[in-house]
Image 1 (cartoon, rainbow, N blue to C red):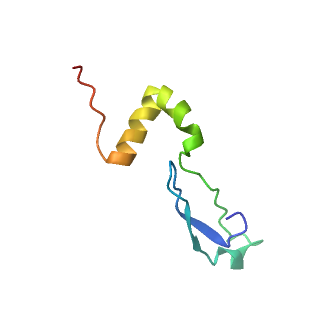
Image 2: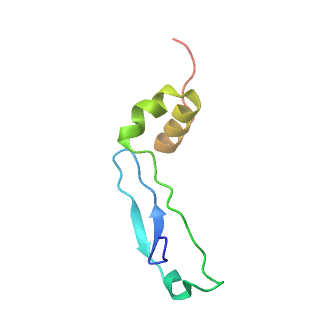
Image 3: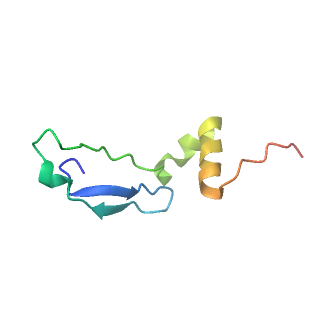
Length: 75
């Protein structure tokens, strides 16, 4: 990604692999027209415990995985 050969298509996370697509940005590398991109990985399983402890991150994770807000009603 740094040199323009690949672009991130889907960052993956929690059991889902990252997906990349081929890019032709490398043709502009070293010119003022080159756009540098940084890879932002998804939440991997090794970070699950850390994410789950943080209430805001946990809500984002639930929304992303299930496309809905978490149920906060008490039983």
